[in-house]
Amino acid sequence: MKEFRLPDPGEGLVEADIVRWVVTEGDEVKVNDILVEIETAKSIVELPSPWAGRIARLMVDEGATVEVGSPIVMIDDGVGTVAAPEAEPVEAAVVDDSSSRARPGISDDAEPDDAEPAAGDPGVRRDDESPASTESEAFLVGYGVKSASLARRPRKTSAGLGKPIGPVTDQVQDSYAADQPVSRPIDQATTTGPITAEASGGPLPRPGQAPKSHSASKRALAKPPVRRLARDLGLDLDLVDGTGPDGTITAEDVLAAAVSARGGATRTSSRVAERVPLKGVRREMARTMAQSFKVPTATVIMQTDVTASMELVERLRGRREFAGLRVSPLLIFAKAACLAIARNPDLNSTLDMAASEIVRNEDVNLGIAAATPRGLLVPNIKGANRMNLLQLAEALHNMVQVAKTGKVPTEDLTKGTFTITNVGVFGVDGGTPILNLGESAIMCLGTIARRPWVVGKGADEQIVIRSVCTLSLTFDHRLVDGELASKFLSDVAAILADPGLAMMF
Image (cartoon, rainbow, N blue to C red; front, top):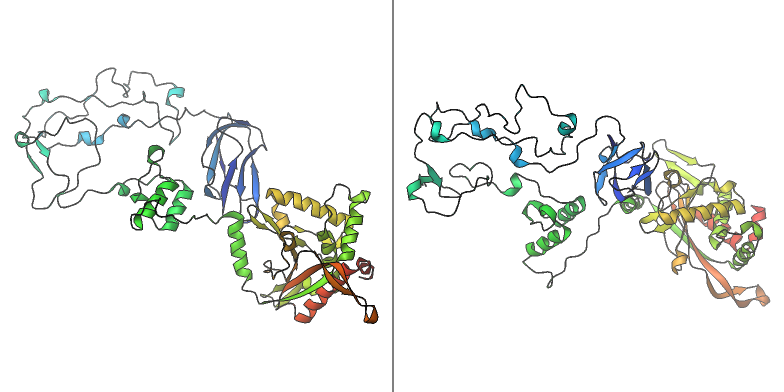
């Protein structure tokens, strides 16, 4: 039996969320078969099985947050003794050690309760009996045991005791004050119903003490997302009544308790705001954006005529080399940015404050901001400046396909040097984006719209309808000043207005 623990997929992972189990209990798996999908701070990661065998037990539920190193699944690889099937713990099978203690009114020299059992007493093996088979005795800790393996010893009756039993008293109060009696003679008791043999709880509290609440002895049953919801609402789960299986507390129970705690209002008269756990990619985005916002930045903005670039896109779509590829204006914008960075290398630099140095990166690892159902991802193309237009088109096409699944490899999400964000696809004219942490600049593309534009000079000036786009560049003012940022954006705009100028860069 193998225990598979949550690994660190190579990104300094501390915890991850279980998104989806690919397998179920009882499934047969081979080495490298996918077991589960997890969501890390960066993306979705598939975890393969390191062993072949049968899925014995899924140890965590979907949606749970698990720390690295915690066991998540048991795999029966057929090596060693196979554990017995899981059984419900049999409480009656546990021998009550309190039976050997003296009871009120019983003589000290009475025959002890743990006298030698009679032959055939279940749960007790005599010396002359052979041990039970391995199959019947083998079990894992926490899996319980078979109900036939243990049983309570039969107790001796009082007929054989040497001394008479003293007056028997019954409990007359559930809680006590120090000056009140806690018992009375049985002949003065009021009949309240038959006394059952099963214990109804733990030992009685001492006089003057109130009984302990349920929360002191047993932890409330609730899944991790429900516990987080209760924590966000400031509720003590031990005070919430569970309506799920075996008393499990559900999210509805927590919300109902929250409404009640705020004045007893019902769901029909008051609604509780929905709280969505901040985890995975969205939590990492919130953290990095908060850090990036501390960087002193500035933004420059300009409009440019991109009619010639749009015509180039149409011509490329008709060429055989680009068949099957997604050719969009983003391809031309990305190539223009790489060419402009070659003339303005500080836009592709990093600030090392510890060494008081500016690190100019040789390669442009071009990041493309992608909105996914799980949050913002910024995968990057390594060495985009060394690619021709066809190679860059292939890289962008593959990046988009992978980003849609949310399963971007970790190496594609790190070591970026310059980022492009395209808000124009949402119909937005432009924006002032926040830096991707560690980079010196980010360029924003607005929507491309047909607008009046003045062309020509002097007497030849005329107003025509052209494809116009708004470009903006947010930059780290510790690395880049306004002049350099303006030169870079002007170079990009010039290439977009006349792609033939790229031959001069």
